[in-house]
Amino acid sequence: MTQAQLAQGTSPLLAVRDVSVVFGGIVALNGVSFDMHKGQILGLIGPNGAGKTTLFNCLSRLYQPSSGDILMEGTSILKRSPHRIAEIGIGRTFQNVALFPNLSVMDNVRVGAHSKTSSDIISDSLRLAWVRRSEASVNKKVHEILGYLKLEEVAHNVVSGLPFGTQKRVELARALAADPKILLLDEPAGGLNHEEVYVLGDLIRRIRDERNMTVLLVEHHMGLVMSIADHVVALNFGKKLAEGTPAQVQVDPDVIKAYLGSKDQ
Amino acid sequence: MSAAEEVVAEGHEAVEAVPKRAMTLGTGTSLLVLLLLIAVPLFAKNFVIFQLTQLLYLGLAVLALNILTGGSGQFSLGQSAFYGIGAYVTAVMMEQFNVPYFLCLPVAAVVCFGAGFLFGQPALRLSGVYLALATFALATAMPQLLKLNFLEKWTGGVQGLVVTKPDAPFGLPMSQDMWLYYFTLVVVIAIYIFSVNLLRSRSGRAFMAIRDNEIAASAMGVNVALYKTLAFGVSAAITGIAGGLSAIAVQFVAPDSFTITLAIQLFLGMVVGGVGWLPGSIVGAAFIIFVPNIAEGISKGLSGAVFGVLLFAVIYLVPHGARQIAILGQQLAGKLRKN
Image (cartoon, rainbow over all chains, first blue to last red; front, side, top):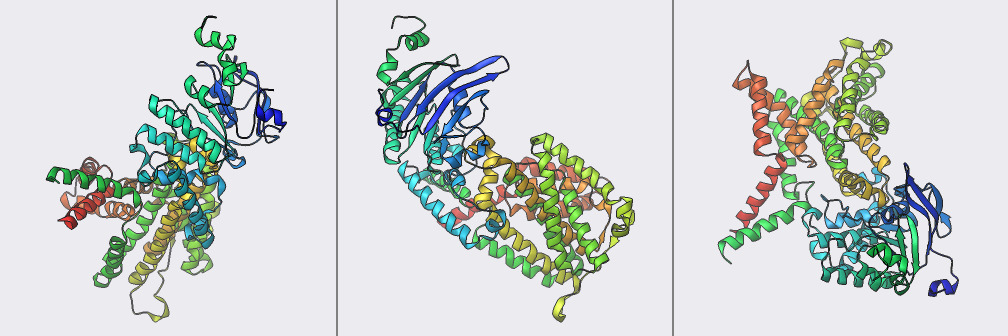
C-alpha cells in the first residue's frame, strides 16, 4: 500500500473494473482495472495507441465497454446515456479543444452549468421569476470561475478568435462550471509550450486543492504527469503495464521498454 | 494617438460590440422600428396595409426558421408544411366550428408544435444536406395530404376554404385591414420577445451548443436529442401561428398555397436577413415580398431572371445579409459619435 488514500481504507471514488473494449477484431482495451480516490491526481500514460483515449471515452460514455464495469461512488455508470454523465459529477475537457466556437466565453461557461440547472422552453421564453433567479446564480458562478482562471477580460469575446492557450482555459472553466467531483483532462498539455505546461501543472494542482476535485490526467507529456500526479497508471497495447507512484512507474522496466523500445534507459 | 491607430482601436471596439447583442437590435433602434411599424399604417392605403401585414407574418415564419437553423443548426426546407397546417387549423376552426380567430392561433401553435416535435424524431438521425432533403419530402407531401378525400368535408379539398375577415372589436373606428395589421403586430412582437428570451436562456444556449459541437454539448449534460426535437417543435409552432395569421389576412386557404416554393422563399428570407439574427427576419420577408415586384417592374418578361440577378447581387455584396449592413451601420454610428 503505497497510497495514503488506500492506507486510509476509503472506498474509491471511481473504480475501473476489468474493462475491455473490442472494435471489430481489434482489442483496444484488455481487462484494465484501477481505482481513483478522492483528492487524487491520477496520471494515465502510455504510448500512442495504448488505449488511453479509448478508456477516457468509456468514462465519458462515448464508447460502451464490451465487458467489465465502471463504478462511480459504487454505482455503475454504464447504463447512463452520455448526457447524463455530467449530472453525477464527471466533467471533462477534450484533446483538441471542443468549445462552442460561435458563443462568447461567458456563454461557453454557462453551458457548462447546464447539468446543474433546470428549465423548460415555456418558462425560458417568458423569463419567469424562477428562471431569472437561476440565471442570476449561474452568472455569479460563471463570474467566479472566470475570475479564478483569469478569463474576465475576454468574457464577452467570441471563443473562435482567442489564442489556443486561452481556449484551453475556457474549456477548463466550462468543465468547472458544473462543480464536478472528477475532472477528466484529455491531454491538456497538447499544443502548449514549455512555460505554459509549467503554469498548467500548477493550475491543475490548485484546482484539486482549492476546489476539492479529483483529477484524471491523460497525458503524453511525461514531465507534467511525473511532476503533479500522485498515482500513475501506464497502459500499452490496451493492457495495464504498471501502476504506482510516479517514482515507481518511472523505473518500471516494462514502462521503459514500452517507451524506449529497449531495456537500457 | 495617430489617425491609423485610432482606426485600429475603433475597429477593435466594433468587433467586440457585436457579440454582446448579436441576436437583437439596441434599445434605441428597436423603439424606432416599433414606432415606424405602429405609425406607417395610419398614413397608408388598405392595400399597403395588407402588404405590411403580409410582411409581418412572413417575417414571423422566417424568424421561426431562424430559430431552427440559426439557433440549433438544423436545416429545413419543410417549413411550408407547418405553415400550411397552421393555416388550415385556423381556417377550419374559424369556418367549420365558429371559433374566434384569436383562439385559433394558440391551437394552431400546439398542433404544429406536436407535428414539428414528431417530425424531429426521425430527423434526429440526419443532419446537414440529408436533413434538408427529408424536410423537402415533408414539404412535397403536404399539399397532397391537405387534398385527402376523408378530410374534404372540413378542408374543402382542392377548392380550399374561404375565411371571413374579422371586424375591429369594441367598435374601434378602423378598417378590417388596419385592425388585422395591429392584431398581427401585437402577436409578432410578443413572439419576437419570447424568441429572444428563449435564445438567451438555458434552452437557447443548449440549442446553440448543439449547433456548434454536439459531442461537447452532450458532455456538458445537454440532452441533444431532446433539444433538437424541441427546436423543431418551437420552430413549427411559430411557423404555424404565421400560417394562421396568413389564413386570416388572405381570407383563403388552398392546398397549393403551401408548396415547396413557400419553404424555399422562407429559406431565402432567412439567408437575406442574416442566419441567426432575429431582426433580420423582417428584412428577409421584405425581400421575398417586394423584390419580385421590383423585378417585374424592371422587366415583365424576364422578372425571374432579374430577381435572380438581384439575389445574386445581395449574396455577393453582403453574404451575411441584413446583419452585415446592421454591423456596418453600427460601426458608422460609432465613428460619427466619436467625431
